[in-house]
Amino acid sequence: MTSPELDDDGYAALTEKITRERSFGCASYKEKCVRRRIAVRMRARGVHTFEEYGRVLDRDRHEYDLLLDALTINVTKFFRNPETFAAIGREIVPALYARVEPQLRIWSAGCASGEEPYSLAMLMHRYAVAQGKRFDRVDVLGTDVDRASLAAAERAVYLESTLADTPAELRQMYFPMQAPYRIPHDVHARVEFRRHDLLREPFPESQHLIVCRNVIIYFDRTTQEELFQKFAAALLPGGFLVLGRVETLFGPARPMFTPVDNRERLFRRT
Ligand SMILES: C[S@@+](CC[C@H](N)C(=O)[O-])C[C@H]1O[C@@H](n2cnc3c(N)ncnc32)[C@H](O)[C@@H]1O
Image 1: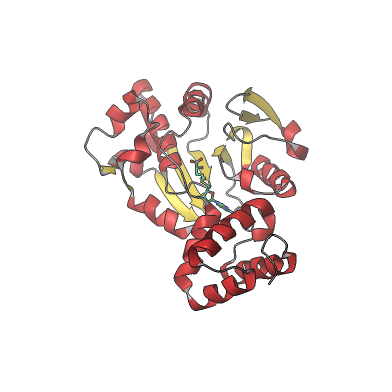
Image 2: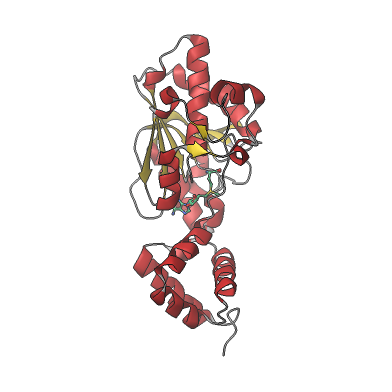
């Protein structure tokens, strides 16, 4: 029996199977990361080889869902990394409302269970209320490859733990009630969700702001470069890209952007 760490053929066969049967493009993700996640599921099922685990997947569709859950890593929070949202509120929100186009398109790519796109909508809403602007100019799109996460995003009912990073002022404005929390109607009405695979599908066009945080780190370098180029093409001139603290912008797309905030990785499309 070959141990999984040494079994490259077994790994290739299993990941091809997953890609074929569940349209999950394992090859574009960092191999170390995928191997680690598969190993966790194998341990949970008490199996020792990739081949054996492939047979478990054939027998048990629920295990397939658990594996995809493990591979997609859906952790998120409202206003996760509040400093990034503070920078968006300061540097981007007023610039968006100053645009001449009637509708403002904001895309949260890899939005998991929806906390990020709702947080963005709240920032836009707060500014609209304070400045007497029209909030119905705002269209926020949240996309993710994981259907279960999107179903939670659409349900829009949240527990206390997802509010841990929310600044007190925003908490008072948007979550004044007790848990479970619901998104206020006017904010909810401007946010839409759609399943979208960043690796396989065309990108939404003419965006004013794209936020893609804690997603790209899981992809290999070549894929990351390709995604940056696609983000550049999806943005209107003067539109913004927010990568957040853990990702870096590099490759052929880099000269297409001017940094707006180096620490929070806010960029403006030139
Ligand atoms: C850690 S969460 C990030 C959530 C949010 N952006 C944040 O920073 O809190 C990563 C998300 O990326 C999604 N994801 C992974 N691969 C993807 C792909 N190929 N296309 C779209 N979303 C993907 C996962 O399903 C997961 O919900």
